[in-house]
Amino acid sequence: MAKNLKQLTTLLADATIWGKLDQTIEAVAHDSRKVVPGTLFFCLSGVHVDGHDFIAEAARRGAVAVVVERDVSNVVDAAITIIRVGDTRVAMQAIVPCFFDYPGHKLRMIGVTGTNGKTTSTYLIRDILRKAGYKVGLIGTIQTLIEDKTLPIKNTTPDVIELQSTLAEMVNSGMEYVIMEVSSHALALNRVAGCEFDVGIFTNMTQDHLDFHQTFENYIDAKAKLFRSLGKPGNTKTGKTAVVNLDDNAGAIMAQNAACPVISYAVNKEGVLTASNVAVRETGSNFQIKGPFGTMELSLSITGMFNVYNVLAAVGAALAEGVPPEVIKQALESFTSVPGRFELVQAGQPFTVIVDYAHTPDGLENVLKTAKQFVQGKIIVVFGCGGDRDRTKRPIMGKLAVQYGDVVLATSDNPRSEDPEKILADVEVGIKEALCADNKGKIYEVIPDRRQAITQAIRLAKAHDVVLIAGKGHETYQILKDKTIDFDDRQVAREVIKEMSDNG
Image (cartoon, rainbow, N blue to C red):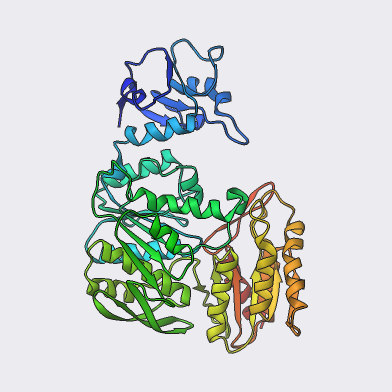
């Protein structure tokens, strides 16, 4: 991956340079702790940390050149090349893909964006493509996969250095496809710089991340960037396709932004792909898909109307890439589950326990609606809202929990720097409002300690009830104000059930 510094600087239109350009760059970094000898160090100005303050540390570790936004001549050793630009983040986005030899141009890239459904859709597509004989990488909320090799991940879409490094590893490992969850943050901040997507998928658009985007219009526009990129001048690959949910109002906007063929999918409208005769049960679902191939009858091990949409998205992507319908059907009918997505906890109890990542109003409503379709007893809901995130969705989620649940236990999610009691007070506004609106007979309790809330839910559960533990899904940690602790909803539920069983 080594590159000549002069070659890299030709990508910068506004650079002023002091020092030697005829030298080899062995690595790129914006974190001084990751600098090795021969590194080009990008000084990013963040909200909490300024990379310019770590130039000396980067130099001590072996940085040979720094990209900066301001005069740093008084702190930089004369042997280090200084590259001054207007925006170091933009400079990084231009240089890093080139440093890694543009791996996003060598892979078929499928990007999935939307508020909910991204993770399950990517796993479905992965299974279909692997069934078709392709080598597939995946980058998402839960993990990064290079075939079956697992890598940890910090963000839904990693920063440009981590992403391009991962894509390069995939190329070197012989991957033909990569399927990515593409968050609105990543699109707005251009973390996907250097990626050339071949298929863009839109799942749905509901309230989330307004703390970052400020307005719903901004949120929609961030998602639309993925579809605009499909028709961008200078693309090196052909065969672009947009796959959009026609039942969502924003689906038409995404389609309008895509200068390429569009495969629409729907349940309530007529799309290129349309699902019908949907039957949902606790452990699976049956439905038909009508499309260019005729009618596909499916009997699946995943449940919920939301998963019908995820399946439609996956079928659209697979058709766009030329996978035969019979292979698509085989892969879908052998698919089992995604960690933390409507995941059943089975520990011998006479009631159902479901753990789901639902952390938005739409996500919570979807899983509660699904539970409502097969529950024979009561629905007991355990949920919370994350700290340092969109506050406006908290009372909405409180209302939904009361609307669909019989017993509501509001608890902590990942409070981060916020006071858990204040987060729960926001949630409680919606709970109380819903209780006053013809939801008599329902009960709620505020239990800030998540383990205690899960314990209470399981103690209250009787035969044929459903306990839904929402918000964290696959996560194996809880982020508190001063520390991060080990915490897995699934494991906690199993432990509580075992304790109850042992105690008779």
